[in-house]
View (tube, rainbow, N blue to C red):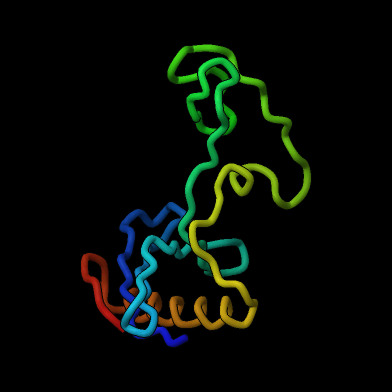
Length: 132
């Protein structure tokens, strides 16, 4: 699978960890949007597009965001979700990837191409988008 296009959309706020959104086209046939470029403690990395996990209300069945205390439909109390310990705690357990690489080698290839395009876009300046 070949990456045929990378579009970078820089974010303007310098104090935030989210630096850009990226759209990647594969083989001129498949697009993945909303890949995030994030600044971590040891440099930049990518985060794949994700969605919030929902939990059903035991009373009415309405799907509420995980960790909600009350149902948005019937106002019934929801069972608290037990906090987990370890590296996969917090926001990682509240979101599920929509699309993601299967192999480590493809993940590294994807991240390398995205971060190269991100660095080139940063030198061009904010407010512009480009294709690589």
